[in-house]
Amino acid sequence: MRNDGNLDDPFGSGRPADRSDDTPSTDRSAKLQGLFRRTRFWAPMNPRPGRTKLAVATGAACCLGLVGVSQAGFGAPDRAAAPAPSAEVAERAEVDPASRAMTRPSTAPAAPTLSVTPSATASPKATTKPRPKKTVRQIVPVAGLDRTQMNNAKKIVQAGKEMGMPRRALVIAVATAMQESTLLNYASGVLPESQNYPHQAIGWDHDSVGLFQQRPSSGWGTVEQLMDPEYATKAFLSALAEIPGWQSLPLSVAAQAVQISAFPDAYAQHEWRAGEVVAEILG
Image 1 (cartoon, rainbow, N blue to C red):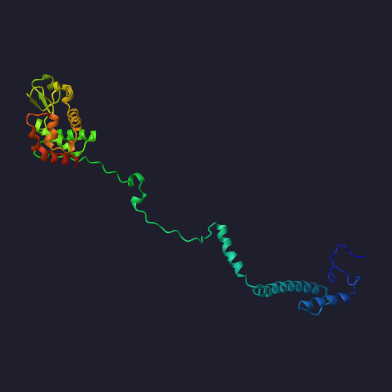
Image 2 (image 1 turned 45 degrees about the horizontal axis):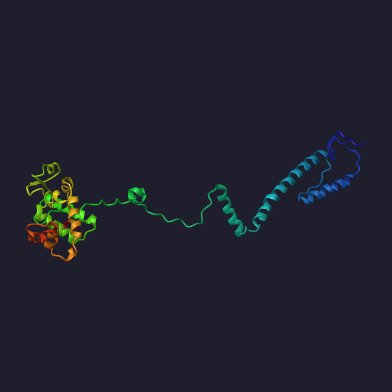
């Protein structure tokens, strides 16, 4: 009968010396010797039970040690002999850490840096050049005139330009005003009403008023109208434009055809001065 309470140790101290087993003792000894030979440790089996147990334990420990040494000693050459990783694997190993760290190097060429000047960073309004202000050309008195006379000559030229009259008509008008009123806006002592309007002098030649000494009684207009330099000029030029061939007439003839003066040749003396004044005003 097999004793289940004891370990299956064929050489244990608890086993009776004459215990019989299914396997003969000589076969069991031969198996143990074969095991020891495979592990390169073999000692003559001692039939004594106590020493046999010690020998078995020592042999098992040696076997485990040999197994560990064999794995440690022979495993390293196997790993060293493993084929080297291919270039593709090495490149992938370099890329993988970069992708994990989200710091993948950029292969695009670096953008050129531009030096920005303060004027380039300013707003469009600041960089836009302001438009130059239109400067009004200052008309200076010429031909011996003072400022008041030059301003009246300017009013004559402006009125003639509004009518579209040529330069020759402007010269005739200025020369006529030089002779009639010395380019001053006259009121009349005979017509006290004329003195109610802006004027620069007072005359006594009948009811003649204004720059061209036009008479209200002759149908040139009302006193108020004739005291206005613009109206008086347009009245003169309208009458000049009705004279056939006035453009080719001498200045004194053209002026006398309009004015019917007692001194018809007096206008010619002002022609050159009138031309200089018109040139200064027209620029």
